[in-house]
Image (cartoon, rainbow, N blue to C red):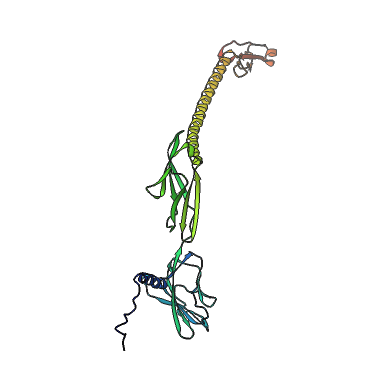
Length: 321
Protein backbone atom coordinates (compact mmCIF):
# COMPACT_ATOMS: atom_id res chain seq x y z
CA UNK A 1 0.00 0.00 0.00
CA UNK A 2 1.21 3.48 -0.74
CA UNK A 3 0.13 6.88 -1.69
CA UNK A 4 -1.45 7.49 -5.07
CA UNK A 5 1.06 8.91 -7.54
CA UNK A 6 -1.56 11.40 -8.70
CA UNK A 7 -1.92 12.95 -5.29
CA UNK A 8 1.25 14.76 -4.05
CA UNK A 9 2.19 14.44 -0.37
CA UNK A 10 1.19 17.54 1.65
CA UNK A 11 4.09 19.78 2.48
CA UNK A 12 4.52 21.88 5.60
CA UNK A 13 4.93 25.58 4.75
CA UNK A 14 8.51 26.57 5.32
CA UNK A 15 7.47 29.58 7.39
CA UNK A 16 6.03 27.25 10.05
CA UNK A 17 9.23 25.28 10.54
CA UNK A 18 11.04 27.88 12.72
CA UNK A 19 7.91 28.27 14.84
CA UNK A 20 7.70 24.55 15.50
CA UNK A 21 11.40 24.42 16.41
CA UNK A 22 11.04 27.34 18.80
CA UNK A 23 7.93 25.82 20.40
CA UNK A 24 9.69 22.50 20.92
CA UNK A 25 12.73 24.20 22.41
CA UNK A 26 10.60 26.30 24.75
CA UNK A 27 8.81 23.21 25.97
CA UNK A 28 12.09 21.58 27.00
CA UNK A 29 13.84 24.64 28.49
CA UNK A 30 13.90 24.80 32.33
CA UNK A 31 11.77 27.41 34.06
CA UNK A 32 13.89 30.08 35.73
CA UNK A 33 13.52 30.38 39.51
CA UNK A 34 15.51 32.84 41.63
CA UNK A 35 16.14 32.60 45.37
CA UNK A 36 17.95 34.65 47.99
CA UNK A 37 20.69 33.23 50.17
CA UNK A 38 19.19 31.94 53.42
CA UNK A 39 15.62 32.14 52.08
CA UNK A 40 13.23 29.58 50.63
CA UNK A 41 11.88 28.71 47.16
CA UNK A 42 8.97 26.63 45.89
CA UNK A 43 9.26 24.51 42.75
CA UNK A 44 5.68 23.90 41.50
CA UNK A 45 5.11 21.71 38.43
CA UNK A 46 2.42 22.63 35.91
CA UNK A 47 -0.13 19.78 35.97
CA UNK A 48 -2.62 19.06 33.18
CA UNK A 49 -6.26 19.52 34.17
CA UNK A 50 -8.41 16.55 35.14
CA UNK A 51 -5.39 14.34 35.69
CA UNK A 52 -4.47 12.43 38.82
CA UNK A 53 -0.88 12.34 39.94
CA UNK A 54 0.42 8.93 40.93
CA UNK A 55 4.00 9.86 41.72
CA UNK A 56 6.61 12.61 41.29
CA UNK A 57 10.34 11.98 41.35
CA UNK A 58 12.61 14.97 41.98
CA UNK A 59 16.24 15.09 40.85
CA UNK A 60 19.05 17.64 41.08
CA UNK A 61 22.04 18.37 38.84
CA UNK A 62 24.65 21.05 39.41
CA UNK A 63 26.38 21.88 36.15
CA UNK A 64 28.46 19.00 34.85
CA UNK A 65 27.97 16.97 38.04
CA UNK A 66 26.00 13.77 38.27
CA UNK A 67 22.21 13.87 38.60
CA UNK A 68 20.95 12.62 41.95
CA UNK A 69 17.44 11.76 43.07
CA UNK A 70 16.50 13.90 46.05
CA UNK A 71 12.81 13.23 46.78
CA UNK A 72 9.75 11.11 45.94
CA UNK A 73 6.11 12.15 46.24
CA UNK A 74 3.67 9.25 46.31
CA UNK A 75 0.40 8.23 47.99
CA UNK A 76 2.59 6.81 50.72
CA UNK A 77 3.94 10.28 51.51
CA UNK A 78 7.28 12.10 51.20
CA UNK A 79 10.46 10.05 50.88
CA UNK A 80 14.13 10.94 50.75
CA UNK A 81 16.23 8.33 48.93
CA UNK A 82 19.43 9.66 50.57
CA UNK A 83 18.73 11.71 53.72
CA UNK A 84 22.48 12.38 54.09
CA UNK A 85 22.89 14.23 50.79
CA UNK A 86 23.72 17.96 50.69
CA UNK A 87 20.11 19.00 51.35
CA UNK A 88 19.67 16.93 54.52
CA UNK A 89 16.51 18.22 56.26
CA UNK A 90 16.02 21.31 54.06
CA UNK A 91 13.58 19.67 51.59
CA UNK A 92 9.81 19.53 52.13
CA UNK A 93 6.72 18.47 50.18
CA UNK A 94 4.21 21.29 49.66
CA UNK A 95 0.59 20.66 48.52
CA UNK A 96 1.52 17.07 47.55
CA UNK A 97 3.19 18.21 44.30
CA UNK A 98 5.57 21.17 44.93
CA UNK A 99 9.11 20.86 46.29
CA UNK A 100 10.14 23.42 48.91
CA UNK A 101 13.81 24.15 49.60
CA UNK A 102 14.58 26.00 52.84
CA UNK A 103 17.67 27.92 54.02
CA UNK A 104 19.10 28.25 50.53
CA UNK A 105 22.83 27.90 50.00
CA UNK A 106 25.05 28.92 47.10
CA UNK A 107 25.49 25.29 46.12
CA UNK A 108 21.73 24.84 45.69
CA UNK A 109 21.93 26.60 42.33
CA UNK A 110 21.36 24.12 39.51
CA UNK A 111 18.70 22.24 37.55
CA UNK A 112 15.89 20.39 39.33
CA UNK A 113 13.92 17.83 37.35
CA UNK A 114 10.40 16.60 38.11
CA UNK A 115 9.25 13.32 36.50
CA UNK A 116 5.48 13.28 36.90
CA UNK A 117 3.56 9.99 36.56
CA UNK A 118 -0.15 10.45 35.82
CA UNK A 119 -3.07 8.01 35.62
CA UNK A 120 -3.39 5.80 33.79
CA UNK A 121 0.09 5.60 32.24
CA UNK A 122 1.31 9.10 31.33
CA UNK A 123 4.78 10.42 32.13
CA UNK A 124 5.69 14.10 31.90
CA UNK A 125 9.05 15.73 32.58
CA UNK A 126 9.48 19.30 33.77
CA UNK A 127 12.61 21.12 34.98
CA UNK A 128 13.56 24.23 36.93
CA UNK A 129 16.76 26.27 36.80
CA UNK A 130 17.38 27.64 40.30
CA UNK A 131 19.78 30.57 40.84
CA UNK A 132 20.64 31.57 44.40
CA UNK A 133 21.75 35.18 44.96
CA UNK A 134 23.10 36.96 47.98
CA UNK A 135 21.13 39.86 49.51
CA UNK A 136 21.87 43.25 47.96
CA UNK A 137 23.69 45.59 50.32
CA UNK A 138 23.07 49.33 50.19
CA UNK A 139 25.61 50.92 47.84
CA UNK A 140 27.91 53.75 48.92
CA UNK A 141 28.66 56.87 46.89
CA UNK A 142 32.24 58.13 47.04
CA UNK A 143 33.09 61.56 45.63
CA UNK A 144 36.25 63.33 44.52
CA UNK A 145 36.14 67.07 43.83
CA UNK A 146 38.37 68.30 41.01
CA UNK A 147 37.33 71.95 40.80
CA UNK A 148 34.67 74.22 42.26
CA UNK A 149 34.03 77.72 40.92
CA UNK A 150 31.10 80.09 40.66
CA UNK A 151 30.51 78.75 37.15
CA UNK A 152 30.34 75.03 37.95
CA UNK A 153 31.56 71.92 39.71
CA UNK A 154 33.75 69.12 38.36
CA UNK A 155 33.44 65.99 40.44
CA UNK A 156 33.77 62.22 40.11
CA UNK A 157 31.21 59.92 41.72
CA UNK A 158 31.88 56.24 42.38
CA UNK A 159 29.23 53.71 43.29
CA UNK A 160 30.87 51.26 45.69
CA UNK A 161 29.53 47.77 46.46
CA UNK A 162 30.81 45.38 49.14
CA UNK A 163 33.46 42.88 48.05
CA UNK A 164 31.99 39.63 46.76
CA UNK A 165 28.62 41.17 45.91
CA UNK A 166 26.85 39.55 42.97
CA UNK A 167 24.81 42.70 42.30
CA UNK A 168 25.33 45.13 39.44
CA UNK A 169 25.59 48.89 39.90
CA UNK A 170 24.14 51.48 37.52
CA UNK A 171 23.69 55.25 37.63
CA UNK A 172 20.45 57.16 37.18
CA UNK A 173 20.68 60.85 36.37
CA UNK A 174 18.29 63.38 34.92
CA UNK A 175 20.91 65.66 33.35
CA UNK A 176 23.23 65.26 30.36
CA UNK A 177 26.25 66.65 32.23
CA UNK A 178 27.76 63.31 33.26
CA UNK A 179 29.22 60.29 31.56
CA UNK A 180 30.65 56.95 32.64
CA UNK A 181 34.41 56.85 32.98
CA UNK A 182 36.92 54.20 34.07
CA UNK A 183 34.15 51.61 34.59
CA UNK A 184 30.37 51.28 34.79
CA UNK A 185 30.38 52.32 38.45
CA UNK A 186 32.21 55.65 37.99
CA UNK A 187 30.49 58.83 36.83
CA UNK A 188 32.44 61.92 35.74
CA UNK A 189 30.51 65.18 36.02
CA UNK A 190 31.09 68.71 34.77
CA UNK A 191 27.95 70.49 35.93
CA UNK A 192 27.20 74.21 35.56
CA UNK A 193 26.13 76.09 38.65
CA UNK A 194 22.60 76.53 37.28
CA UNK A 195 21.98 72.77 37.60
CA UNK A 196 23.49 72.17 41.05
CA UNK A 197 20.08 70.97 42.27
CA UNK A 198 20.43 67.77 40.20
CA UNK A 199 20.13 64.39 41.94
CA UNK A 200 22.25 61.37 41.05
CA UNK A 201 21.21 57.88 42.11
CA UNK A 202 23.30 54.74 42.31
CA UNK A 203 21.24 51.55 41.94
CA UNK A 204 22.49 48.11 43.01
CA UNK A 205 20.36 45.19 41.84
CA UNK A 206 20.28 41.50 41.13
CA UNK A 207 17.33 39.49 39.75
CA UNK A 208 15.61 39.32 43.14
CA UNK A 209 16.45 42.55 44.96
CA UNK A 210 17.28 46.20 44.39
CA UNK A 211 18.64 48.98 46.62
CA UNK A 212 19.70 52.53 45.83
CA UNK A 213 21.22 55.66 47.33
CA UNK A 214 21.09 59.25 46.01
CA UNK A 215 23.10 62.44 46.36
CA UNK A 216 22.29 66.06 45.49
CA UNK A 217 25.12 67.79 43.72
CA UNK A 218 24.63 71.16 45.42
CA UNK A 219 24.95 69.53 48.85
CA UNK A 220 28.02 67.63 47.71
CA UNK A 221 29.81 70.67 46.34
CA UNK A 222 28.92 72.78 49.41
CA UNK A 223 30.26 70.07 51.66
CA UNK A 224 33.51 70.02 49.75
CA UNK A 225 33.73 73.82 49.96
CA UNK A 226 32.91 73.77 53.68
CA UNK A 227 35.62 71.20 54.31
CA UNK A 228 38.19 73.52 52.70
CA UNK A 229 37.07 76.41 54.90
CA UNK A 230 37.17 74.16 57.96
CA UNK A 231 40.81 73.29 57.23
CA UNK A 232 41.75 77.00 57.00
CA UNK A 233 39.74 77.75 60.13
CA UNK A 234 41.55 75.00 62.07
CA UNK A 235 44.94 76.37 61.00
CA UNK A 236 43.91 79.87 62.07
CA UNK A 237 42.78 78.65 65.48
CA UNK A 238 46.09 76.85 66.00
CA UNK A 239 48.03 80.00 65.11
CA UNK A 240 45.97 82.09 67.55
CA UNK A 241 46.49 79.59 70.34
CA UNK A 242 50.24 79.43 69.71
CA UNK A 243 50.53 83.25 69.67
CA UNK A 244 48.53 83.49 72.91
CA UNK A 245 50.78 80.94 74.61
CA UNK A 246 53.89 82.82 73.49
CA UNK A 247 52.59 86.18 74.71
CA UNK A 248 51.54 84.63 78.02
CA UNK A 249 55.02 83.19 78.52
CA UNK A 250 56.66 86.57 77.83
CA UNK A 251 54.31 88.33 80.27
CA UNK A 252 55.08 85.85 83.05
CA UNK A 253 58.82 86.19 82.47
CA UNK A 254 58.68 89.98 82.66
CA UNK A 255 56.52 89.82 85.78
CA UNK A 256 59.00 87.52 87.54
CA UNK A 257 61.88 89.77 86.48
CA UNK A 258 60.21 92.86 87.98
CA UNK A 259 59.51 90.95 91.18
CA UNK A 260 63.17 89.97 91.56
CA UNK A 261 64.30 93.60 91.02
CA UNK A 262 61.82 94.82 93.62
CA UNK A 263 63.06 92.31 96.15
CA UNK A 264 66.70 93.32 95.53
CA UNK A 265 65.97 97.06 96.03
CA UNK A 266 63.95 96.45 99.19
CA UNK A 267 66.74 94.38 100.73
CA UNK A 268 69.24 97.33 100.34
CA UNK A 269 66.97 99.81 102.22
CA UNK A 270 65.64 97.49 104.91
CA UNK A 271 66.52 97.99 108.60
CA UNK A 272 68.52 95.30 110.33
CA UNK A 273 66.38 92.55 111.64
CA UNK A 274 66.80 90.57 114.79
CA UNK A 275 68.90 88.14 112.83
CA UNK A 276 71.27 90.90 111.62
CA UNK A 277 71.57 92.73 115.05
CA UNK A 278 74.72 92.18 117.15
CA UNK A 279 74.37 89.61 119.86
CA UNK A 280 73.38 90.68 123.40
CA UNK A 281 76.35 91.29 125.71
CA UNK A 282 77.31 88.31 127.78
CA UNK A 283 78.71 88.52 131.26
CA UNK A 284 81.12 86.15 132.97
CA UNK A 285 81.45 86.01 136.72
CA UNK A 286 85.02 85.76 137.94
CA UNK A 287 85.91 85.29 141.60
CA UNK A 288 89.33 86.49 142.63
CA UNK A 289 90.79 86.12 146.11
CA UNK A 290 92.93 88.77 147.75
CA UNK A 291 96.66 88.22 147.94
CA UNK A 292 98.01 86.76 151.14
CA UNK A 293 99.08 90.11 152.52
CA UNK A 294 95.52 91.46 152.81
CA UNK A 295 93.69 91.49 156.03
CA UNK A 296 91.25 88.84 157.15
CA UNK A 297 88.16 90.95 156.40
CA UNK A 298 89.03 91.20 152.75
CA UNK A 299 89.95 87.51 152.65
CA UNK A 300 86.51 86.52 153.89
CA UNK A 301 84.80 88.76 151.23
CA UNK A 302 86.39 88.18 147.75
CA UNK A 303 86.06 90.76 145.04
CA UNK A 304 83.64 89.96 142.06
CA UNK A 305 84.57 91.09 138.55
CA UNK A 306 82.13 91.18 135.59
CA UNK A 307 83.54 91.28 132.13
CA UNK A 308 81.47 92.53 129.18
CA UNK A 309 82.41 90.92 125.99
CA UNK A 310 81.07 92.43 122.78
CA UNK A 311 80.49 90.65 119.46
CA UNK A 312 83.47 90.36 117.17
CA UNK A 313 85.96 90.70 119.98
CA UNK A 314 85.71 94.50 120.00
CA UNK A 315 85.01 96.38 123.20
CA UNK A 316 86.48 96.71 126.64
CA UNK A 317 85.99 95.20 130.11
CA UNK A 318 84.23 96.81 133.05
CA UNK A 319 85.31 95.79 136.52
CA UNK A 320 82.77 96.00 139.23
CA UNK A 321 83.83 95.82 142.90
